[in-house]
Length: 162
Image 1 (cartoon, helix red, strand yellow):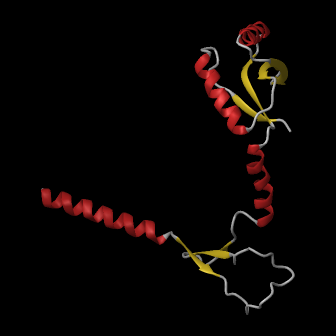
Image 2: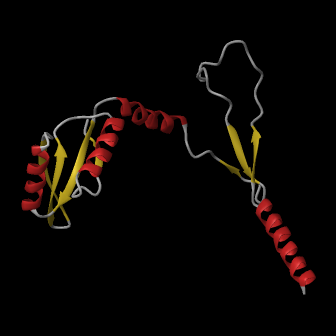
Image 3: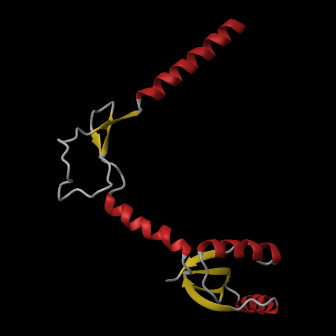
């Protein structure tokens, strides 16, 4: 009985390994043209040759998902994290009396806030935000601090405003 169980487990492991390796994609470098001392007018300095991914099963070439233009669009988001362009939203509720109570409580501890409104699905929501701009890391740290300090703040939202 033990021998049969061990053989079945070994068979399952081997078959699993075989099936998972069959669907892997292989990378191969595109053949480079003759290298010249100066880059061509269309090439940008500092760009490595693009690799294409070829599916083993079908032999089709699969294009990479991110292009240079998309990378340039993503890059500014990363650099904005060091600038003060974020607001910290602490509460979002439909009850205006509760939002005013939260605003008064935070004011007693020296936090300046303001209330904004938004309509979603026919319901009006009131949002309480701190009245200052922060870097992303400052907003995150302050949000965590306020979450620990006030039991009524369960979560917070960091919103880019500029």
